[in-house]
Amino acid sequence: MNNDLIKIAQHFQLEGEIANVKPLGEGFINDTFLISTKGPSPRYILQRKNKKIFSPIPAMMDNIEKVCQHIKKKVVATGGDPMREAMTVIPSINGKLYFLDEQEEYWAVCLFIENTMAYEAAKTPELAYSGGKGIGRFQSLVSDLKEPLVNILPGFHDIRFRYGQWDKVLANDPVGRKAEVSAEIEWIESRKAEMLAFWALVENREIPTRVSHNDTKINNILFDKKGDVLCVIDLDTVLSSTVLNDFGDAMRTYTNTGLEDDENLENVSMDIQIFEAFTKGYLEETSWFLNSKEIEYLAFSARYITYEQVLRFLMDYIDGDRYYKIKSAAHNLARARAQYKLLQSMESQYGEMQQIVRKYIKL
Ligand code: GN1
Ligand code: MG
Image (cartoon, rainbow, N blue to C red; front, side):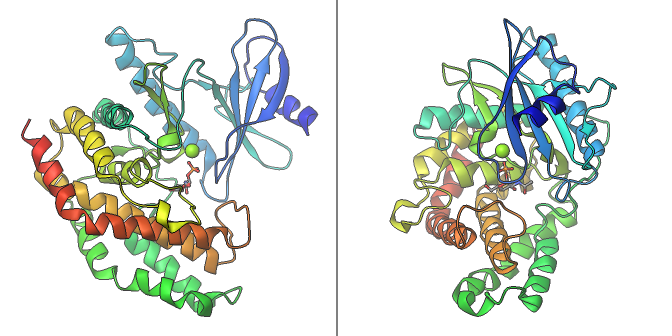
């Protein structure tokens, strides 16, 4: 395998000689590897992109490149380091942003940014505050990106689209798991009306569509050693959608006192201090462009995305685990249950969450 990976890596415009290629991280969708080189040359990230999910991959890579170039220009203009404060896509030796191998798998490479930190949870309000500034700054930097992005993930955070998938999976019940999760199914069904009411505001454009990241879980952000955000990574999902999805998904991961798939539900709750710190940082960067509806629904977006995640994990469980990588037979069910516990915690603290948004929007 390592030899095969080295051969794949050799199809890209890398500096230096490759020393080895090793698996990296625990993404649920793509396969990720670290390319080390001999001598002083940089290291790189190699990814096999999941073509069943992102389609078409070449358009996805064009989206990523547009966003990276846009951010780099702005970083340069403000005296920053474009190689550290933005992702750098490394082209193939044929000048493409990807390499297609004989098995028709798509590969892509980007520069590995050294001396950074990534986290699985925001343990302190300071880290959450910087995370909020980081996502806010990202959205602010791309807010004037005029070139259109190709929608390579139709319906990604669109709950109406998700209900369409949900109804089909429930009707087919392909592996006979539906009966065993009737209580969990009711968690989804009982909240349909309020979720659709929110999404209707996006559909009628009261909540506008802007360039956004759409996968802002905390481990998709690189921090420097001081704890400041350096760069937002994992840009596969950059799309035109509501920026509330980014706020909501960040809150789903930053504020969780437990793990995303925690088997011990006692561990799971929303930490309101982390919510407050992130919100403060986020609004400092974004309040200049957000409209009043976006602000009104900011706190709700945390519930929306967490609910959507319960649905997606549960749906994948019922569907026989075809989407997310799993580590055990009931992994998706454990994920759905843990995310539901988090959702309940958000619902019970919703009044305070709204007050916090109002507090920082006045600044
Ligand atoms: C996936 O690729 P990764 O692990 O960063 C997923 C997100 C989910 C997340 C759940 C394209 O993100 O939407 O929220 O898992 N990405 C895609 O942790 O489906
Ligand atoms: Mg990721």
